Every structure is written in structure tokens, then in C-alpha cells.
Image (cartoon, rainbow, N blue to C red; front, side):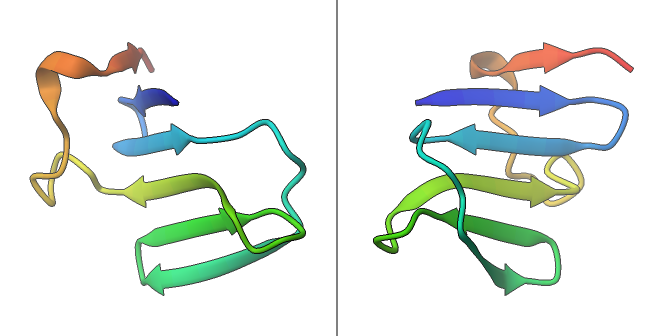
Length: 65
């Protein structure tokens, strides 16, 4: 699993698999789950992660603006 934090957009991105994404599920207004052809999670995008207090500051790769 990979975790990346994009500071310029306050986006936290988890990648679980390198399989192609074929579907998306909006879990809420700011959270997107990407699925493969079997319905398995490929990635999870969380917008406004720091603002929502979801960002584990000590354990992510931060991508500067």
C-alpha cells in the first residue's frame, strides 16, 4: 500500500493495487473509492484531509505544492 499527501490540494491518497480502475464510488462529498473489475478497492482519495483531521502527519509522503 502507498500513501501520499498532496499539500497544495490537502488530498490524502491511498493506493492498494496497481490494477486498472473501472468504477468509482463516492463515499461522501470528499471521499472517492476506486474499484477494479471485480469490485476490489484499488485506491482511496480523501479531500481536505488535514482540515478533516484524517491526515496522519508523521506517516505520509508529503508532495509539496
